[in-house]
Image (tube, rainbow over all chains, first blue to last red; front, side, top):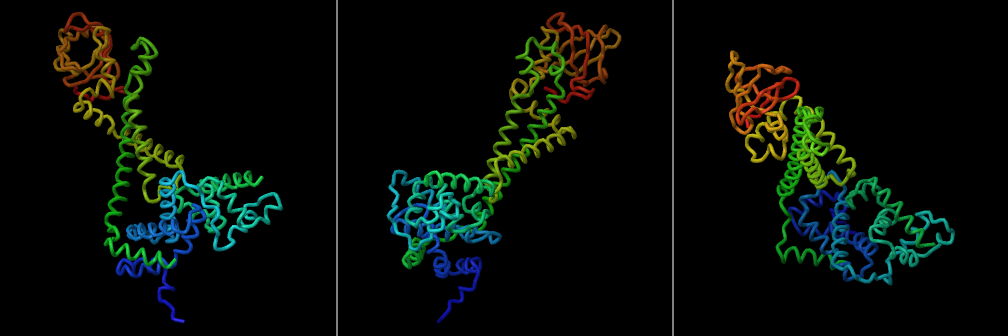
Length: 187
Length: 240
């Protein structure tokens, strides 16, 4: 199988390549588009078309701001932060929208969230993705997003802090509050 | 999903989108840091001048100079400078929050850091006499400064109540009469035969003094006590 040489390159190396040749941007897009697509759907509950529009806007913004990326930090956090900001903009522009909770996730990633956040009721631990998906839909976006980042995207506190642009301590309290809200909704 | 990659590249090429140059981000970062530093320094200056005015204000300890508690608060506490200091600390907080890594710090941490730096720098500035010099510059150049920011002159420019301040322009030790130019530029004859000269006041030309006594006429004032303009015997810098 022919292997693209970019596969072994770091994100920053590809960023430097893109600044020389815009066509190389496809390698970075390919690296992140699926992750970000799922992330957008998990936090916004939007249909495929809207998700792709948001995602395209994310990549355009990232390209415009490529020179602001600081290699001291994780590129992943940087592009997730742009996605987060774009999601916030989408929410502001579509305040009265209906959540698309019928949306089928491509995998059963929600299966684990109930047990991960230590729901006391044993029965809940066996909830399927659909139920967790529905409960998450009832949470405020900020609580939903932090749970998604922590338990589904499996980001650590520092990464979540970089993505949401809040202090690490605040991430901890946001997660705790989100867990409490989730538990209340389950009961 | 492949469409996203294709469409993004197409849009970039079609609209000829270019990455914003690095220097623009560097300039923005430098501006934010610069504004933060400026506001931190302004906050420190505000604190230093507040300290200076508070420390050289007789009203704070000598309540006989005022009629009531309200007047005491207004005339003894440099409220305008304290408010300005708080404003600069807030703006510095806002600037810091907008630096690249400002989000990593909690509001409390940023405020504490700003306040501590403003206090330390303010104390140092005051210790080196910078606050006094700056206060003189403001007093000389900013209209209404002495009626809004530094109210010491409001206390000492009340000859009808027995308080007067100014600098000595002539001395006659035989007749025991001084001539002073008050803070508004008016010339007064000061009879100091029975006056107590306090602190480190040296009766010489240019010496800036505060006088307690009573106005005998429109331009004659009988002194019972002569004090240095600034406490601790330091000379007054104000020439207004």
